Image 1 (tube, one colour):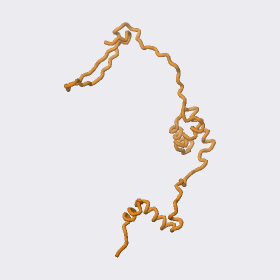
Image 2 (cartoon, helix red, strand yellow):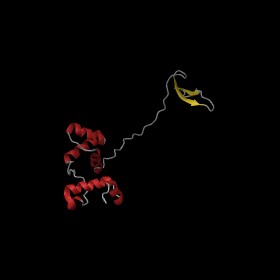
Image 3 (tube, rainbow, N blue to C red):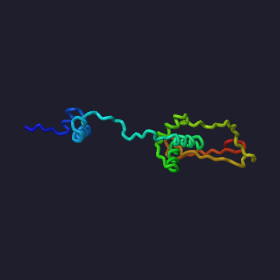
Image 4 (cartoon, helix red, strand yellow):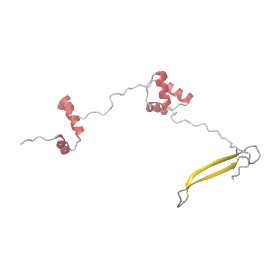
Length: 156
C-alpha cells in the first residue's frame, strides 16, 4: 500500500495554505531542521537609521516655512535639486515632529461688495440657462432661462 499524499491533502489535514507548506519546505531544505523550521522575525531588513540628518531636516523645514510646500512637492524638490530620495511619509513625520504638518490658512476678513453696474437699467443683462428638465408624461426637453439686470438686480 502506497502512503504518499498530495500537497493539498497534507495542507487540508493540518489546516495550512500551500504557500505556507512550500515556505516551510524551502526553509527546511536550505537551513535544515534546527534553523529552518523556527519562527522568523518579520522585522524589515532594510531599515536605514539616521537617513534624515539635521541638514536634510532643516531643508525640509525651510521649504515648508518659506515656500509653504506640501509633502509631495518637498519630496520632488529634494529629489531634483539635492538628489535626496525620501518618502512622503518620512517628510510628513519630520513636519509632524516640528508641528508643521498642518498649515494655518491666512484668512482675511473681507467685506463683500454687491456688484452693480453704473449704467442705466436694462443696458446690461446676465442670462443663465438651466436644463434640460422633463415634464411628467412628456419626452420633450424643457429649459429654464433666467435674465437679471446688472444695474437694478431684478430678474426678468
